[in-house]
Image (tube, rainbow, N blue to C red):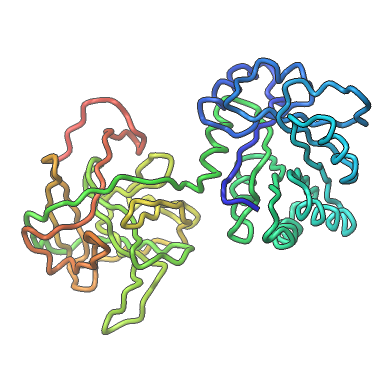
Length: 370
């Protein structure tokens, strides 16, 4: 098992779009392109692994073309002989899992082979869990077939470790980008900045949204929220003890319903638009991100407070929160700051998106928010 999440695209399914799919895959730094035709590998750039699926019985002097990895079924001894005959090629085993016997073969492959390419024919992910557990501590790499991006996201997360890689058919331009995004789990990093509070104002009653996620959030983690699309503050999850109520480590008391938050893929959403099953971007104090599911959003009428701040580049940022001591934001180093106690000069963590927005998508047009 490895820490790196690999993305392999099967270009046999791309048809007339093959050229464009390959170009996108190279641009997105997809790890491997898969085919069963050695001639197809000849024109691929050196920056991508060339994976050949070999279905027959390899005889003496077989031509694997420019393949970096050759995947074929059969016992380990056959691949050992090929490794000796073709020192410049890595060999892996293909296993189709349909019953208990083939599941045991997959476990054996995961423990012993350099590459294991697995095709689970039934929709349950329990067999994959068993293989991942069996491969704990092994040096090989597991690549699991997925029918599409939605299944790829699940495969990457099985047992929290996930499969080392996913092999997905490429049918159109956009598949490479979507698979790469699935491998990251919506993750990646954002560059957070220190904002200096310039003032706060009690603005009376309004509707605020609590976002209850389907994940435990860390004490240094929350979601980014702001009144404007070009400036947000990091609202902390309710993981820190409070004197009058238990912690809610899945919840962020996020802000007034008009506020923006990040929902992955660079898109913003209004808090009022979030529904059960939606995704939001959880962010920690180092800017590390992950997509988490929304379990529910609680919108209730509460007194509100408006917090104004300024970024080092002069950009102003506003956040409207529930006007209550227990609603908090994060400052440098993970300092937990009660919203009602923020004073001019205090520092909070924030994020400054660069693009204006149209229905949540970045767009290059003039837009004034005030």
